[in-house]
Image (cartoon, rainbow, N blue to C red; front, side):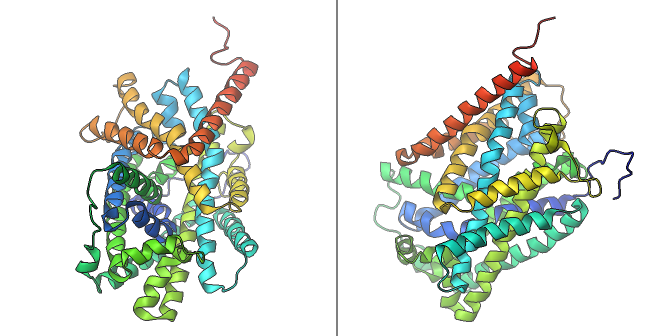
Length: 462
């Protein structure tokens, strides 16, 4: 689409159901499951770690119903920014809640992108023997920079590119699932340690940690919600894309888990977590090498790297629309409201998030993931789950093309799941402190900005 010099560019509704679903799935099936599977097994100490995948899927599906109802009723770019604003009142507390979400995005979006880039770099080490830590960091930064360049184009071209990337993702996970199940070993899969299902303190602590990793691996089912202005028939497309992507990826992850355990005994996979050579970083490569040899391991490594890159691509695409949506409404810096004069995409937002993500790509992956999960849960997911119930009470007249099934049970389950994952492990409380510090800073900046601009709660009374 070309834009006349005398006409303001308008975002293009060019994303259909399959493109929306694939954008979610390439966001979800990033490098995460290929590096967290040994950690999930270690968290629960055996193949009962399948419960972590299942519990994570239940939380994600319940939370997905929250996103589906919001996305159908408020189908604009920005996702949670719009949802929180309307749920808590656009003229009062909703202003604060939506601002805190945008403020959080400045930290969480680059962390999410960086986790995919770092994972890409870690699998590169399987092909690049002797790669130094500095070279690994440069690879991660390079992935982010290349993705920004690739996204610097019209949305219709990106939709076609997403289908190509999705094809690589499906090929990767499909090959692993088929190869592993072709060598299915029931005795190995059901080799539970003593007291595996005893409901002890250790069991629940392990379940919480395994579920945290699993939830990180599932995240991305809401990516299409950030592109609401670019979706065709959003009232139908967004809910379907969210729920379809969760169901499909949950099945893929469970089958992958069975496949890997069938080939690599779980005790060996757990030992990889403590290996000083970090062999757990490329468990997919070891899995394929054991089945078909080194050449096959090299091929699956390239495909995992493709999958990691596809995730980085999808994340940067979705998140770059959030500061744009806030800036258009006057709730963020004006520069972010600019669209590219020819291709009509928020280019400044894309560049800014890319630069910050490149910086976070220099950090440790474990710290990046922990900080990401806890910051997102504290600032966004808890308030949004409460918000969908508040919006029902505030705006019963609002047109809702999709309504949460069995309301409000899924919202209550999602809330309980987030709290369980968040507060069950004392060793991770430093990240909760970071999240609360970011929140406090955001609240302070919001009120200072509101006072300067004489907006709520400092607006002059008429």
